[in-house]
Length: 324
Ligand code: ACO
Image 1 (cartoon, rainbow, N blue to C red):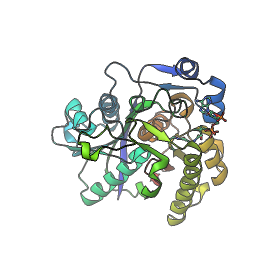
Image 2 (cartoon, rainbow, N blue to C red):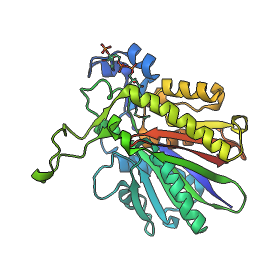
Image 3 (cartoon, rainbow, N blue to C red):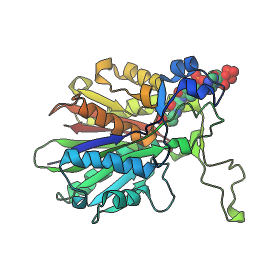
């Protein structure tokens, strides 16, 4: 009856960059970063740790856990806004890397909501054809997309990838549904230009580089309100209360957003998975990395209700519910 997660995996770059390390890059300090964001460190890609490589390594772990081989996959979707190239997609590179010969592959751009949107999409394919096996990935190397002179943004983000292999299960469990939202009207509160146009007629006058630009305070307010409203709406639709939920895996934006979310939803600490402290905000990768860690730590038991919620540029946001 349901789209189930058969296996999870994640991969983080080896290089750890602490707040003290950042003090050498921009005018900031450990105390400011910890108190405003909760972040202690983040992982930053180097060598060949491109978005697609991190994705492929995470994917292999998820396939191993699922007991599924790469050539059984029908589709690969990668949620990302920091693909190694604009063309081909990261998903096509992953297909090559893992040898998923019969899968078709594409990327999905929903910023930090990329994994949740992709999981919802995979569910639709599987409900239409129960034999499908799909690899869903959220992956970023946002270190390649931040302005390292802008202390408002560069301290927030980190690199990494998380993956899930999904398939069909006869029992009434798995992905129970999601409520997804977008508001393009607020695009200019959080955005990233493309590289400047090579067509002089279409040059964007205020394009000062393909890096993240953010109105931090506005993003903060919208993120808290949107995620808590999405969670409440979904639970109401599913006829469940917060007391029925065993674990919430929110997008790891920053600790103050997560604390406000806990406050609004009256969530006890032990019900909320948090790793933003160690990895920073890894955008589309944050939920699948957290999901894999929670899974491997035994934090999710059979029949548990698991709630995911996200918010990101676009704006895009939503909540999804899984019966494990
Ligand atoms: N180190 C030291 N000082 C800093 C830094 C820094 N890294 N960055 C900004 N400041 C300074 C500012 O210049 C300002 O100084 P001033 O008062 O002299 O002008 C002061 O600190 C306060 O700046 P604010 O921007 O008002 O700080 P605020 O308390 O709003 O915190 C923050 C900024 C952390 C970005 C906050 O707005 C926030 O968390 N926003 C949410 C953004 C977010 O999570 N975005 C991620 C992408 S979207 C998503 O994933 C949901």
